[in-house]
Length: 132
Image 1 (spheres, rainbow, N blue to C red):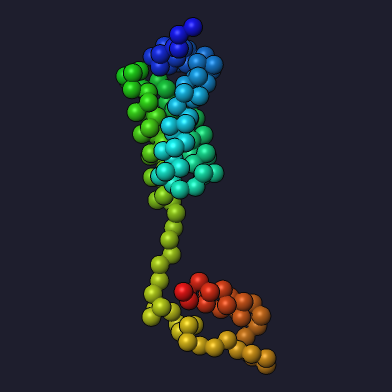
Image 2: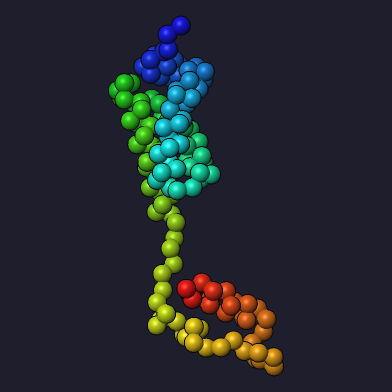
C-alpha cells in the first residue's frame, strides 16, 4: 500500500478526517520536535511547543493555500512559537554598581545581628548568584 501524499491527507483532514491529520502529525512530528529542541534547548518545552504547533496547524488548516507546502508551513508555525517563547523569557540584568549595597565585599552579620533570618538567607542567595 503506497503512502498517501500530504495533499490527500490535508484534503481529508479539512473534511473532518482526524485520522488523516494524525498521519500528518506522525509524519512531521520528528522534524518539528528536532527544530523546537534545537531552537529552545529544552526537550520538555520542545514537546509542549510541538503540541501547540500541531493544534494551531489543525485549527488553521483552512488557511493553508498550497497543500504541497504543509511541511514548510508547519515548520514556520513551530519556529514562530519558539520565537514567541524565547521573547517571553525575561532576563533580569543589573550591574553591581547599581545595587544599594556592595554584597560581594560586605560580610554577612553574625550572632546578635540586626538582620532577620529571612534577610540573611536572601543575602546569601544573592551572593552565590553574583560571586563566580
